[in-house]
Image 1 (cartoon, one colour):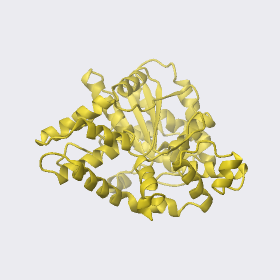
Image 2: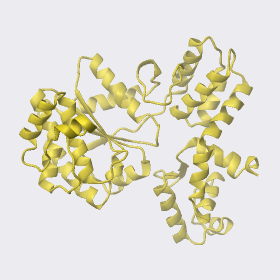
Image 3: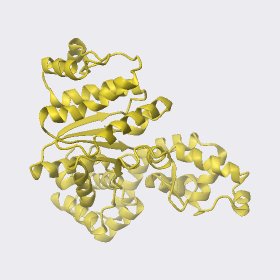
Image 4: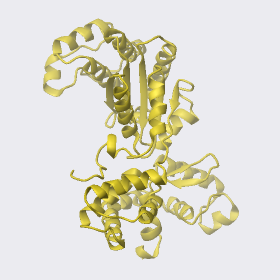
Length: 384
């Protein structure tokens, strides 16, 4: 993608804006053998923070082994454990013979058997779908700690979309992971650290804050917003590279609209870059916003089509600025039926990752572009 505004993948270096404190916090955690958790809406920059932190560590002379496991299409603990074990072994070994030796030495007491033919055909080390015992689970979770000792090097295990394995069976897996992490909490170097990442913010909040799994075992990194100065400098530098000019006040207006969401900001200015030849003016902004809405509108329409009439009315109340939904006046005005129904509606919209509520129980629509679409098109004059 020949543009300074990258939105289709995680970024580092000049394309990484702000969040230095987040990287410093994460670096401090993993270099001391502790564990971290990061959650936020999709494309909120979680993996960019992880990758920039690794770049910073390598620059400072610290070169840990990275094991990254993507759980996007994983729901069952037994599938997770096989993928996890295979990913850990592939992080420290390259040849099938070495993989087989590590598997035999460190997982010989489990029912996982390295299949070289499967590996050469699919890239996966272990097959099967039968459940594994708690003791087998424990041996598998111990694997990265043992690999740190084998290679005499720190290991960082990044589990992406961690919330996907949350279920009744997943809770047993969580407890085993907790026990293993706790046992190694104050172990000497070389360290193994877990970085747990989730894009379903409310689901992650349920795991780590409401049900308190991994309590005092993992430290949360709350993603910070880049400062207005950092964002302005980042955007202006991007346009300057192409010989283009943009006004700082215009940049700030865009950042406010998208609530500093770097994914939306990068996508928006990527479109502006494609549409312009010199000065970025208001017409360019209008055309870029129209393009961006057009890209996301089918997704937004699917979201509202999946909502009940009650849920739509509660969402309308949020757009209208309501923060207390159980008052008689609000219930009657928006036909929400009862305070008990209001609680059910809030829970449903949180489960669907449409809304979140802060510590004061005030609502926020997770996606700022979706909020804009609701305000301007679905509930606003543009949608009539």
